[in-house]
Amino acid sequence: MNHIEILKRVTPKGLHSHLGGVRRWFRTLPVRTQRQKRVLLQGPSFAANERELLRQVETRISAGDGMYTGDGAHHFGVGLSAIRSIDQAIDAAGLGEVKRILDLPCGHGRVLRFLVHRFPQAEITASDLDRKGVDFCARIFGAKAAYSNPKLEDFYLEGQFDLIWCGSLITHLDEAGIRALLGFFARHLRTGGVLILTAHGDRVIQRMREGEFEYGIPPHSIEPIIEAYRQWGFGFTDYPGQSGYGVSLTSHDWVYRTTAEIDLEEVYFQAHGWDDHQDVYGFMLKKG
Image: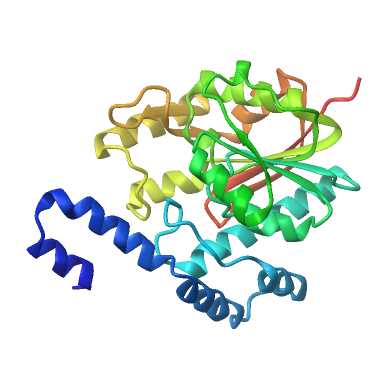
């Protein structure tokens, strides 16, 4: 039993949320996250360029970062895995110089901390509904802040982007939300640029059934969403108490057909390519 659990037993329940904040603060102490990165760097599984990139990345992690659970090796490893997929998609697209990048949703910079060193000359825009996350990315990583809007049809950013990274957002949207998001990206992607996004496919079904990962949905919702995916290529269920936001499953064929409707052409696909979990897609605007 750790110290926080011991404190919870002797502290009034009304103060438990404060103890949770203390725990998150301790987890993200710079001396701790720096040590976690050093341990990860000692691993044998990195190419020389990846190891150099990892050496450069900022180790400060926000206490409000919901993606950080205390496992720094995994947290930094997920960011590095994203860069691998991004590099592969860029190569597949034949993309040259990258001057402007959009990271949406940026969260608290799990991937953005790598992007700023992988593309040091690029202007990077950090966008999310979580304003504290956007502010953290602007303050710590020097990104340009852009608070997002739940109504993407009313959300516009200045100019277009050479590279758009969208890690784990389609994974939470219903069909209408996904179509709105794809339309937003199509409007903001320059001709010749590449959109890279991640989605839930077959590997997620495996993890759902084996209970390997907690997806935040009731157990009775799992088989219906899988059955819809098997029949139509798309399944979705809301998080409890929310509407239009939950967990989606999207087949390769469904994504291919849906993106083709808005003139996005697939140039890259890697099944469970991001952290051996989510499928990764790369798109360019159709020519002509």
